[in-house]
Image (cartoon, rainbow, N blue to C red; front, side, top):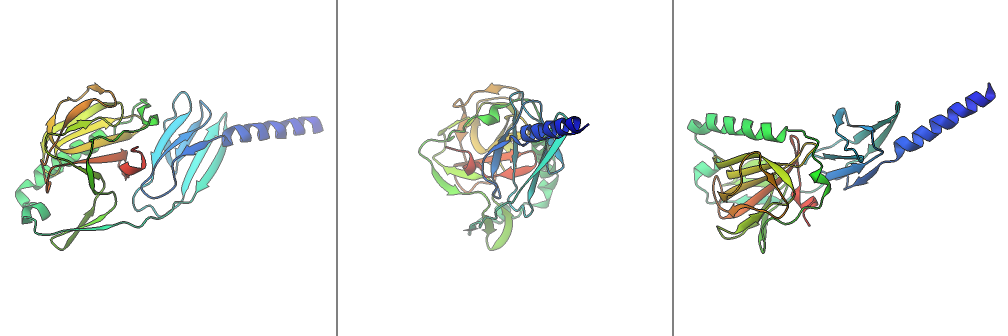
Amino acid sequence: MDCKIIKYFLLLLFFSFKVSAVEFNGKFIQGHFIIGKTEPNSKIKIDKKQVKVSKDGYFAFGLGRDRKYDVVITIEKDGVKKKITKKVQKRKYNIQRIDDLDEKQVTPPEEVYERIKLENELIAEARAIETDLDFFKDKFIIPVDDAIITGVYGSQRILNGKPKWPHYGLDFAQKEGTPVKAMLDGIVTLAEPDLYYSGGTLIFDHGHGISTLYMHMHEIFVEKGQKINQGDIIGTVGSTGRATGPHLDVRLNWFATRLDPATVIN
């Protein structure tokens, strides 16, 4: 009987060790993108959300701009569960003031509200896609050569003295017509030449709920459903939509959670 008990506890200890074998690539800081690596055939929950795990044990998630509570990662392997709790560090964000704008660039007229609603639904649908692709594991590249960063993630925007939504992207200022490269392999899930806010807009699926957006583009060279390789020229820099000048605004998402592109671009 004693031997059976010892064997049981040794077996439990073994599985506990196997379950705890998880690594994280990324920082537990507001706005950050994190890639996890665990044992193949494990199940992972981020807080209460079940996430996909690739055949080789990779999974992905992100932390929102204003997240104030810890992350609870639940790992399950062969019926044994283990929870890991990670504290999320807070960030300080810039305040970006832009004055002397046309009032339509600050507050859209009522007649476009329905258009904006429909376009937001299109974007939300593309961001909600969850596939088994695992392109997210690779390193991202800079999408525009020799550009100047003019806007960063998380900054509170004050337009003509009025506080607005924070900026959730990374802005690359370059002259109109400058080629834009795909930062990562992906599948085009949205290709729209003229959205009200973002103008020429592309969204790419990289798997497991990770997507990227490219906004204010002058030209778009790809179409929905197309497979794109990292470094492919997908369009050109523009100032379409509600833009104050030619630039590319890129964004990174984990489903509806907006993440900081600067945490992944090399």
